[in-house]
Each structure stands twice: as C-alpha cells, then as structure tokens.
Image (cartoon, chains in turn green, purple):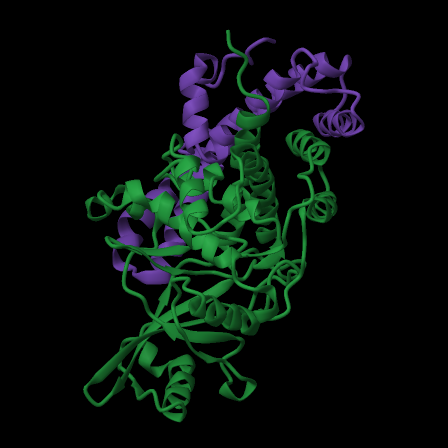
Length: 336
Length: 137
C-alpha cells in the first residue's frame, strides 16, 4: 500500500465514482481502516468541483468465512436504509456494489465523523458528559430498531433461544474437544428457556459498544448489521451487557458506560416492551457463550491448510475470557 | 550451554524488534496487524513458561474430581460428558473451584489484562503468583 493511488482498487473505485457522478477519487485519500475481521473497510473522499464527500467502502474480504448467521452485504445495506427511515441513526448507504463494479460485494456509505473505538468512548474526556446518558440513549435506539414493522424488511431468518442453542451446540461439537464450562452453560440455558415472547422483533444482532459511532452529542450511527435477524428483543439488550463489551469497566454492565436499569429505562421511554433484568441476564449468559463460539469460528482457516490471518487467530484465544465471564455469573467464587 | 538463548528469550528479542524498530514506521492496517503479532508472540512466551504447570494443576484437580487418573485430554472429555449428562453439577464439591481455577490459569496465558481475570486474581490471592495450588483442593 505504498501508493494507494496506483492500486487496482483505487482505479476501480475511481471508475465507479465517475459513473455514479459522485466526482473523482481524491488522490491519496484511500485508506484501509481496521476493525471487522471478516470485512474490509476503506475510507476515501470523492471530489466534485469544490464539493468533497467523505465516504466509506465496506466489502467482504476475500478470505471471509461463510456463515449462515450473517446476512449478505446487499441485505445489510437495505436494512440500514430501512432503519434510517425509522429514526435509527445510521451511516446513509449511497451505493450497493454490483457485479459490473468489479469491486466485490459490499456497499458505499457516508463517513460519519466521531469515535467508534470503545476504549476511547469510555476514557476520553470529550465523552465525559455524555457517558452517564449513553446507556439510556442506547435503550431508545434499540426500541426504535425493534419497532420497525417486519413487513418492511428484506428477508431475514427468525430464530429464538431454543433453536439458536441447538445450532450453537452443533457448532460447538464441530470444534472437537469440549469445554466443561460450555457444557455447564448450555445445560443452564436450556433449562431456563424464556417463555414465548409477545412479538417477534427485528434484532440488530451485534448492538454494542464498538459498533457505534459516537460524538460528544451522542450516538451518530449504528454500524455492523450483518448479524441481524428476527427474534426475542431481549437478546439485543442482553448482548449489550456482555462483559466483553465493557472494555475493562466491569462494574458498568451496559457497554462500560451505564447500568442495565438505564438501558431499560430508555427502552421503555421509547415504547419498548417491559423486559425485566432477569431476562436481560439470561441473554447476557447466552451472549457470552455465543461470543466465545464466534471467536472460535473466526479462528478457523478459510481453507484447510492455509494460515489463519493473525487478527482472527488471536481472536480465537478470547474463548477463555468468555469461560470466566460465564463462571462469574453461573458459578461465582464461593464466599469464604 | 545447549539451546541458548531459550525459546522464550528468542521470542522476546523478536517482540522487541517488532515493537521498537518496525512498528514506529508503520501506519494503518499494517501497524494494527504488527501490534497484534507482538501480542501473539507475547502470548506464546507466557504459554511456554506457564502451560506445563497449569496442565499439572488441572490434571491433579481432575484426578481428584473424577476419582482416578488418565490423560489430561481424556479427563477433560469425561468431565464434559458427566456435566452434559447431569451426572456432575456445580453442587459437586470441587467442581466450581476446578472450573474457575482452570479458566483463570488459561487467561493468565491468553489475556492477563482482561477485566474479569484481574478481578478474579485480586479477589483470590491463591492465583496471584500462579504457582499456588487451586483453592479448595
């Protein structure tokens, strides 16, 4: 990447921008951003006379792992458009890649200024005033997502706790050697399946600190919709409180910046149904287990015998964090 | 004088080179991946020094829990099966302690900066040196 302006990607992007009448690619502006182990994210600017448009290209990486849990980039783009229409802060999608673009599968969206790095959101002084309000605001955004009518959505799979547990157990077994902690967690979750929920809802599927662009004024965009599905709304709320998404601030359950109660207050204030903390806790346990299996899946080689990309390989070693998180909930240290 | 420097010392040299000589000249995705590579090397260094003792402790606890010795892999698998079938539950004396001690030993290698690990170690001095035996064993 010594001279991105000369790269084939820049050439193809330039061709596309001209065809879409977005302008031309600003020289030297194309940069690969980090984040997203299965997707590539590129930032670039389109120049049209005096107008500069800051854009993002998000596309499947060549060694992306196929998964039945992830929706296609085209579906993701349509979902983001729909969510934007229903008042969810999103990065507006400007173009969905087509085969003739020769850029792979993905979409181009507006680049939203702000902070996406969870640790900065939790530690930078710029967000000090926002942090106590952020969990409540996340609750209101989740309520808006969950209120989007299902008949307005692209096709999505429907999946509740019981079938997800069966699928996760099958995935777990496919990895070979078992984990006693995971066996405990699976048994616990199966014995306490949530009662049939009142209504199926659109779930973001990965709503958490780290997938939000935040400014001092609040959440500006909800990113990474590829795990969206239809299911129990408490799943999104529980996922938001998994310890892995507190980024070191272990005593603030909601994203490391707030409490479960604040999250639920915001959720109800925006019209979300009454969900109690026990149900959120169920989905937190479920979430830790699911995250661990996602970590393990990401550390699988795309093809047998090929090396695992280093980022994904190291994510594989995050399974142990979920084992201790599960034990902290299911088997805390005996008081002595 | 055989095998000097040790595997751990060699990895330390590599880690140092990447961090101090290479990383400052890199940007973006390359810097990101080199930082992860340094973390991977440091993880392997910890595994080299800590894994054998951790496995010994796990083997000892499993032999007591299951009443009899076998290979570590076989005992882990037996424990999984007994939990899955309901033959062993968290009420079983020693199981909770075993699971916690094993998870903590693993995080000491995988991710010793993780919040739940730091909390577990702070709350249980037996883990601090990482060479004391498991609590309750």
